[in-house]
Image 1: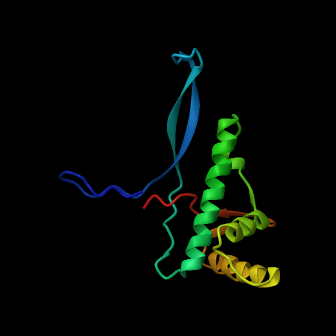
Image 2: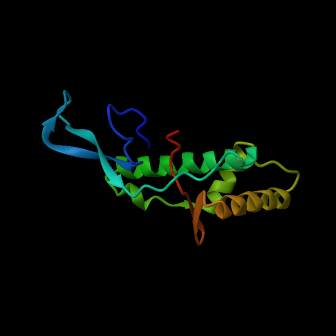
Amino acid sequence: MFSLKTKDGPLFPPASFKAEIVTLPGVFDSENEESTSLVLESIEYVPQKDRKSLPEKSEQCLVVLQDLYQSATDNLSDRGYDPMAAKIQSKDWQAECIRRKVIKGNTSASKKTQFQRIKGELKKGELILVDGVFVAPAEPQDEG
């Protein structure tokens, strides 16, 4: 995240934040349930990699992974678990890319080959993190 507007001073350095939902003890809503609030925690800033030269299918697969990861973190948060524990299996990412028709082919082998090529390209470009069978976006959301 960049601050592009300052008055009479230099631009602020870039910063990154992680959003976390917290329960407000002793504060209840109209349905007598504990209220929650969004808290931003400062995290290490990592510059966004250059995605301008990324092929369209690779960009689309990256968006699918970001969607899956966001859904997993939201699900964990909603259940009171640490959203940083979210994990996406590569096979689930591949299946979702196929389901959304980002990855197409006549055979399962051709779809697998296409997916592995894209996965390798995204890993080489440092846009995804691979840990065994698990994969995560290097930047979970594109904050543009």
